[in-house]
Length: 306
Ligand SMILES: NC(=O)c1ccc[n+]([C@@H]2O[C@H](COP(=O)([O-])OP(=O)(O)OC[C@H]3O[C@@H](n4cnc5c(N)ncnc54)[C@H](OP(=O)(O)O)[C@@H]3O)[C@@H](O)[C@H]2O)c1
Image 1 (cartoon, rainbow, N blue to C red):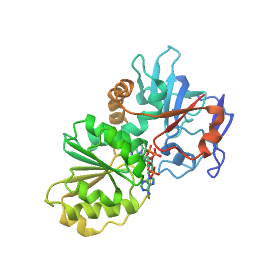
Image 2 (tube, rainbow, N blue to C red):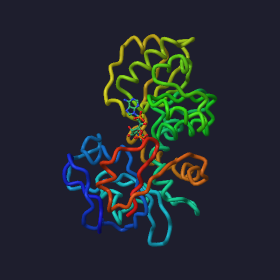
Image 3 (tube, rainbow, N blue to C red):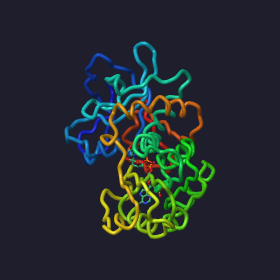
């Protein structure tokens, strides 16, 4: 079959022939999203990467079964990835999509949308309250704004560095959209932070928010979801003593595969309903090398079509 094939962690994948996937449940891939997590697996930097090459990238996708069902599925870490004509599916990591589902919207939106959905529902036990989305201008961030509202947030503040894209967030339901230097003023008393940045912007925002809080004993749950700015940060010890700060993470591992999967049908229905603003750009799989190296367009998710 044809697939995107990574032969070196320093090079983009090429469209090439690759052995057929093995397994009892092989499906025809319809669409697969080019998410940041796909890139980090394909350049060997993701924490689950085992360094084996050649490999087919792609962590999730939409596929058609032999029975004609449309599935959203997540590939096993060590299996052939989803950027291929066919993939082996483990039904414990797949959900059947409702009739009328737009496969491209699901392939584009499920991964970024589940980042906040799972964080709020499975890690924060979110029952309402106010939410700051730190790094709100990307695909996952702008969906986090919409999903926090959908899940009952009393107030949602989006923060990012791209002022032009920040304006868009209020049209997506954010009560406020601010640049990173204005975060303490806007979000001093938030209950939950969904953090897509980490590194220096998080160091600054965390310190500024905790110092600006009217009641330092008011609980603040800070959820680490992405590390677009950096993988590490320096955490002054006094921040943990001087405020009711709880730092947790949300992702593969901190939430079990079973629990993530349990959230997907409802999220798939929400995406299918058209309620979430998702902007895919479809590219033929044969053009994967070009799609990989072109500069990403903010808020647009490339979806490869075999
Ligand atoms: N844990 C999970 O469950 C989970 C699930 C899905 C995704 N994620 C993670 O979430 C993150 C975002 O994913 P995505 O799909 O939204 O990616 P994306 O669409 O590429 O967006 C990334 C955004 O990060 C912003 N950014 C990058 N560096 C920044 C910096 N130094 N300061 C401020 N903003 C910065 C960019 O803003 P500009 O427009 O200003 O460049 C861009 O809008 C990734 O790290 C991804 O791996 C986690």
